[in-house]
Image 1 (tube, rainbow, N blue to C red):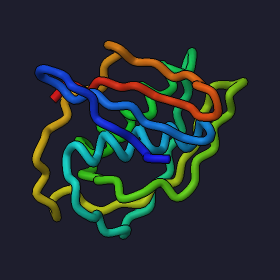
Image 2: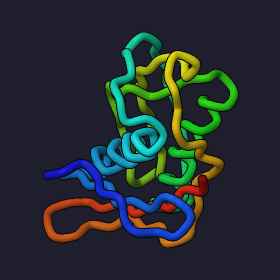
Image 3: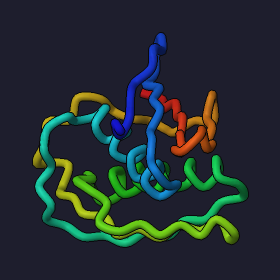
Image 4: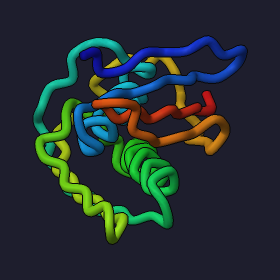
Length: 137
């Protein structure tokens, strides 16, 4: 199963991310967002932990992705991979261990301004989870 695919959009970046479980679909959403900015390899040097919560799955995904943009803007953290992710569907809380590097070490092509709720969904389709996201660039 592929991790994500980009969809046609006139001005912004729209993608769908996939996973056998919800955690993997969220993880692949973060990877798709960073891949839109830089498609090369990021050295796994810095470790971070994040914790986010939401009102529903879409809000949780939104807050999860916004946390990455916050880390990028405030600390220059650029994601390489997610080492561990734990999602509590009942409480709508997510904890993740991130690995990445300083953004200044890479030539980032696109500047992602924000995650949007436009066209966003998180749903299970047959045997896989799908997250659709539109990011403002």
